Image 1 (cartoon, rainbow, N blue to C red):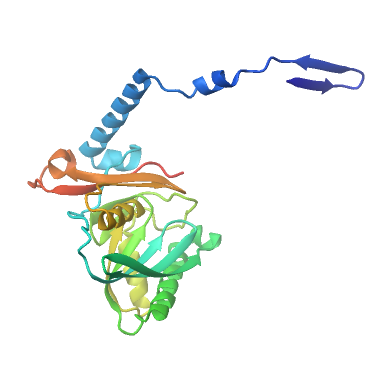
Image 2: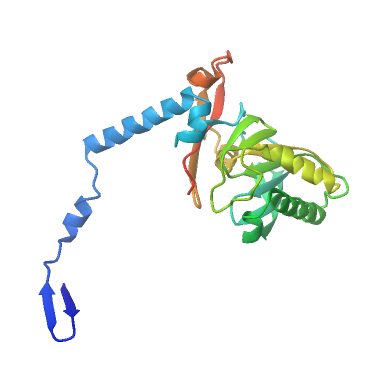
Amino acid sequence: MACLISDQSDLVQTTTEAIPFEDIINEFRLTRDNLIHIMDSIQSAFNRGLESEVETYYYHPVKMLNTHLMVVPNGSETGRFVALDLGGTNLRILAISVVKGGLAPTSYSFEVPSEVQTGTKDQLFGYIADRIAEGLENLGFRDVGVEFMGFTFSFPCHQRALNSGTLIRWTKGYSATGVEGEDVVTILRETCKEKGLKIGDFILINDTTGTLLSGAFEFPGCTIGVINGTGTNACYLEKISEVVKTASLNDTRPWLMVLSTPNQ
């Protein structure tokens, strides 16, 4: 490889030796010892995430956030379901019908303006509520209303119940003021009520959890969900007995845990 360097008077040529392709590739190859070290480090991070509530939520990269879901679908479910999905640049309103064991979704997608993403709480949730109203109108639910609406909120939350979750911090370019540290379900519920929308309540999940639930419906036995997109995240089924920070719950059933990694 030749490199030409010039100044006002001279042209100097220097030559460097080409690096063999295999030498470059070898830098990315992992030995067995490397893999064991990575495995041990991940396991240690998981264990720390299962042990502590406050410290891990704010400072630990693997937060192991509770979803408060005790079961996953098995493909026998029936009905029509309505959901809201806020995952980044787009907002979707969906109606999902279960037809002959399959999912038949109808959805309306809206781009969230950057000034709304980085504005205020009222601007963001007012925009969301207006799009919900538009979506419910198009789907035929505006007048009859819905008892429960799924709310996929793809940002790290400290979830206290199926219908309650406090935003830990914004990711994916969002920075709307007045939301971090607040219950996003409460904000959305109150905003929709102010706009006269007939929605009984919202059920909060993370997009990773939604991936697992969808996978379990189509492939019973699925126990892991992974998202690789604007952010990276994963979730899996864990026994409550392994979750030290919920030691007060004397229950041996599986509990769906969300492993939350930083979404920069």
